[in-house]
Length: 196
Image 1: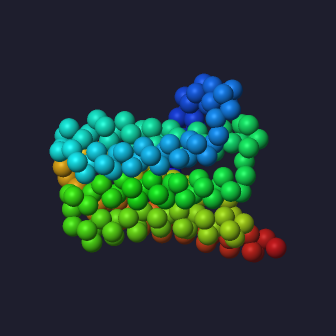
Image 2: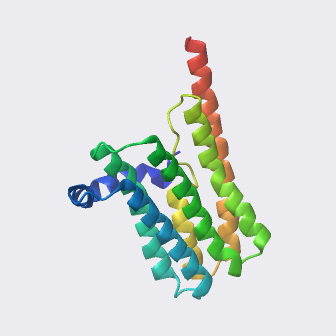
């Protein structure tokens, strides 16, 4: 179950012209990672400070830009031969920071314990994927509430004011995504061990 992650190849193709222009201008992939984090911070601020539904447009635009930067940074690094281990670490830290900054915007809209629960749960799918990659498995992505869905759900809250239900979906959906990834990872690692 890949969720909206299944659209990534289509989306990456739409960004191809922009990626080529950025490569020609020598833009650093790390700059794009930082831009994505700034967009997420802006979306969190808009969510916190603007009432629904006025928050919907800025949150949607900023989170669409956050996803574009998240797609472009790694692709640009690969296209230009500038992939580095430090860049990979920065990319992972940037993605986690971006998720947390958006969710921090809910602190004015929902109980802090629920925001904290959703924030913790939102990191679980990545923990599983990174653990699998450390064990030599292919990086797992997607799921019912992956990065793309975690960008879409705050837009729903910004449009409707349904902060508590959205945070509940983020928390439960992220935990389910992590469990599904762990199940896939466990099978893959078991098959790899049996093949030796």
